[in-house]
Amino acid sequence: MCFEEYGIKLSKESELKTSSAILVAVAHSSYKNRSAKKWGEGLIPGGVVADIKGVLPDSELREAGYSVWRL
Image (cartoon, rainbow, N blue to C red; front, side, top):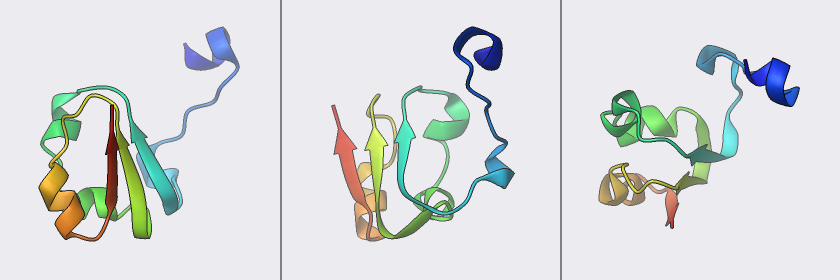
């Protein structure tokens, strides 16, 4: 649906490369229950997590060395 409507091809999480930032814009339970360690697997050291919905473990992510940005 995303491609047909917006021309954007989504990738599987396993296909993603390590990034300097992760944007979380939905409050799916699988995201809310994910540990800071698991989020960190997709980030470079010192990376940024933009948590638009404010549902991720803020202090746990910061303690792991990541920057957290929330609305």
